[in-house]
Image (cartoon, rainbow, N blue to C red):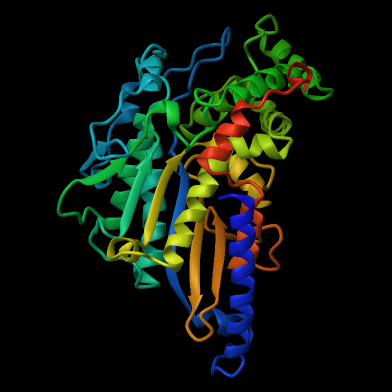
Length: 416
């Protein structure tokens, strides 16, 4: 959305809201926040979630190997749910270069890197059960049997995410689906559900340069050297805090015996991983290149729900997006709700759109891992739509704006 159109939308919403608030003053309703919430009708839910627990992406070079057996990938019966994968236009599933790359790394024990485990499957099933309680049992919003007219499902084209989506759907619908669910995915070259270094050279260059620079930042550099020296791997320049954290989280959730040194420094590793990521995401344009297209999609879905132009748009109730920590963290930053903790497996950011039954005002409620959040610029968890859109518009970018950002050249790119 261009800036002129954004201002027009926000201005129109503000004027319209003022009229509705005046009309609502005489409407019968309970007093207070609780009364207002009881008068709200849920109109749309959007969930961006991280995949469940998995095997590490790669082992720590030089460290004692941890055993990862293929039996960890066994599928619990309750998580089974039939699905088919298509591209954005309903065509065949694109090839997945990332999955091919993961298959090249086989751990001691025989399991492959980056694969969803039975622990991760249970986590996603539990997330689906939470969504079921929220939107079928406590509020009769979704149909108890999967209805493709109600639900749009999109995932990155990575097997652990497709399987995570399967498990979430199994928890949500308790295997009540008449036919396989369609999960839509995209080519890696145009994916928006993670920071895309294939189609944004500027983001790739800035991330590479800042990743190198962050290693020399005071505190971060000292802690990394100290931990690597204690582990006996101080000669390996490829090891950073992200690799250490990835292995810590994977080993911990699967009750694996971690390197004692690494276990003792877990809090430091997580804190420095967050510090490093904040260094990479330290300005607005970088955040826009990371999650601007995703925010734009979430925003467009809201706009469509406000004024659906056809029966298909009117029927849509739920959008599911299977993503990664690399998207959730900048998304939380953009919303001003980041808690300085790394997003765990199966973490979710959920956006709910409500309309007041009497005043017809619109509101957005954001939650993270099931807990209501106060978005920056909003006074409470239940945020008037125009205020929420004003926050989102600072980081949301259209495909054209994204391409312009990605094609810009920074004079100081190498020293940024």
